[in-house]
Length: 433
Ligand SMILES: *[C@@H]1O[C@H](CO)[C@@H](O)[C@H](O)[C@H]1NC(C)=O
Ligand SMILES: *[C@@H]1O[C@H](CO)[C@@H](O)[C@H](O)[C@H]1NC(C)=O
Ligand SMILES: *[C@@H]1O[C@H](CO)[C@@H](O)[C@H](O)[C@H]1NC(C)=O
Ligand SMILES: *[C@@H]1O[C@H](CO)[C@@H](O)[C@H](O)[C@H]1NC(C)=O
Ligand SMILES: *[C@@H]1O[C@H](CO)[C@@H](O)[C@H](O)[C@H]1NC(C)=O
Ligand SMILES: *[C@@H]1O[C@H](CO)[C@@H](O)[C@H](O)[C@H]1NC(C)=O
Ligand SMILES: *[C@@H]1O[C@H](CO)[C@@H](O)[C@H](O)[C@H]1NC(C)=O
Ligand SMILES: *[C@@H]1O[C@H](CO)[C@@H](O)[C@H](O)[C@H]1NC(C)=O
Ligand SMILES: *[C@@H]1O[C@H](CO)[C@@H](O)[C@H](O)[C@H]1NC(C)=O
Ligand SMILES: *[C@@H]1O[C@H](CO)[C@@H](O)[C@H](O)[C@H]1NC(C)=O
Image: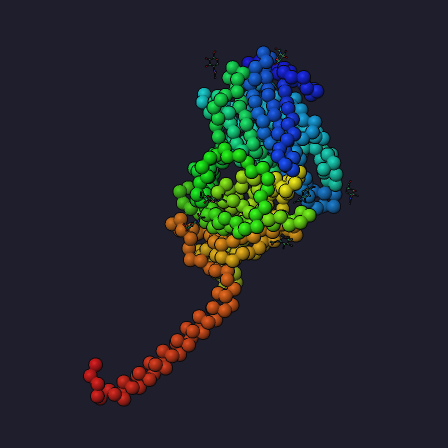
């Protein structure tokens, strides 16, 4: 295979290959698809890719605080250094954008499959989005691409949002169409749909297998909703679970509604039918990550604590929310609260709350839960254990009554025993038992 790329269309970019920046997307959403067609010396396509991406970067400011910055490849995108590859060099897809940022991925193949290998991302904190950054300069992160092998001569397609988080940088990808090792210069007509797009039917996520047990949606390629719905009704209740091997290790049932306050509060219901579950289980910490088809990530982190009475309890410690497609969203929103102590109950039990509850993430972001039942630890036989109910009736009212009734019953029993005993004694001579 030849090693240099050639121009195929007149574009005012500086070197080889063709890159189209497509500004588009429905409604208010500012979507920037990156499209790259890498060709070899004989004008034959070897890599074709079109995808959406954004980066969320945590950086330290000159006042020693941490802030988040968002980068979206949307201006001055070039693709210098992309190569088709040969026996000694792997194919490489490389782009440069904005004020000195760059991103690349190289690929490997076997006889049957190809897959991404190493992703390298370099961002430049001299960019004005980092204007108050403590340190200025280029920061590079390198991460292995978690993408699974794709059958050769098929086009990998994934509408679902995938994220990679490493070293204070979250990389988000969605609406990916890509073929590497294109044969005979013609992009294949056969697709390989990613598991996530299929997963509402057959979930297969590694390493912690997650599992959505709500009713499946029928098609993997139903069109993206193009507008943010305006739900005011109660959200649908979803059953979510995580598996560790064959064993269910986390169970959650809930309806979820986000209250995002921009100029005015907007309520967003999460549709469990199109929500994807990942996360991790552990003995003292567990994470449930819900990823809905509208690029919304909701992470729940659970922890275990020992009380003074030495009876361990679990609770919801942290909620993180990332909304890539915001209402009018040009900028993704990322917010978290790691100082919660909600849904607190005994380890080994499940926590239940039928009534609506509100988790305050930030001033501008709340999560409402409905018909909640959750068990992040010690799930036995794929079933919820006994539930502790959140109802204040149980805590403050029923318990004293129950205790009172039990005590009352005891007193009555003692009295009865006394009188019966006395009666028996008095009648002992007359009755034969
Ligand atoms: C393979 O590709 C690399 C990078 O484009 C190039 O430097 C090298 O000379 C090529 N090797 C052969 C044998 O074509
Ligand atoms: C490659 O194809 C484009 C049009 O598709 C043509 O303009 C160009 O001259 C070709 N280049 C070579 C080296 O064949
Ligand atoms: C931090 O950087 C900003 C932007 O350059 C500047 O306006 C501000 O004065 C700096 N603050 C400190 C404490 O240096
Ligand atoms: C990530 O942020 C933390 C502070 O939260 C900082 O201590 C650390 O150096 C950063 N890591 C990298 C790789 O930038
Ligand atoms: C590419 O061309 C070769 C030779 O013409 C042919 O054998 C092969 O089947 C083609 N591959 C595809 C995917 O069309
Ligand atoms: C969730 O699971 C429970 C128990 O299996 C079942 O009764 C309920 O109908 C399920 N809810 C949904 C929305 O699938
Ligand atoms: C949504 O959040 C805003 C701001 O915190 C609050 O004023 C409003 O009452 C909330 N709406 C609902 C339905 O909870
Ligand atoms: C989810 O799927 C079920 C069963 O297919 C359907 O009854 C329900 O309306 C769906 N919910 C939403 C929000 O689409
Ligand atoms: C939540 O966000 C914080 C800060 O951005 C981060 O340190 C933490 O790892 C996140 N937690 C999860 C579960 O993603
Ligand atoms: C979105 O933008 C339009 C026009 O700028 C504005 O009228 C509308 O209130 C905005 N919606 C939200 C939810 O911020």
